[in-house]
Image (cartoon, rainbow, N blue to C red):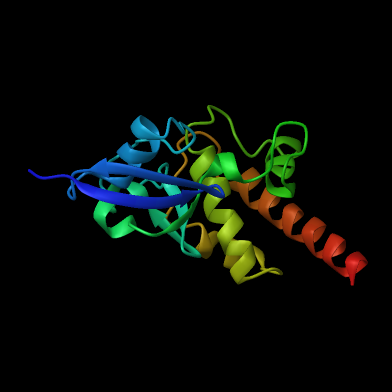
Length: 163
């Protein structure tokens, strides 16, 4: 199969590479760009471990072809916060014990990142609905929901102080 030329901006950095059009975005991200935050879980879009932000939308990168991502702006967990300067979501997950094994955490935080941009002041029910596409086998979700609500409150406080 012939390869196609792809241009992607991932975490603010431009990349150009060759890929088979049927190659999955998760494989491009992990194997070509060496960004191992998004995880390969179910490979059927059910678990959400591979969630990335693409052009302002949460997508499950295990079901997006590389060709569909050509020209896209993509943010992975590596593009949210930084060592020593955690994003409020990352800090809240740590503080509220919103993770155990950590396998789902990059996808959870990346989805929550977009969700809080769409709904900056969600109710608990809205968080649960907004995160329904991301599964966790360890936590029981209570602390994940607490972490997202805490991060939303923190982000709103910072936003209000800046205004």
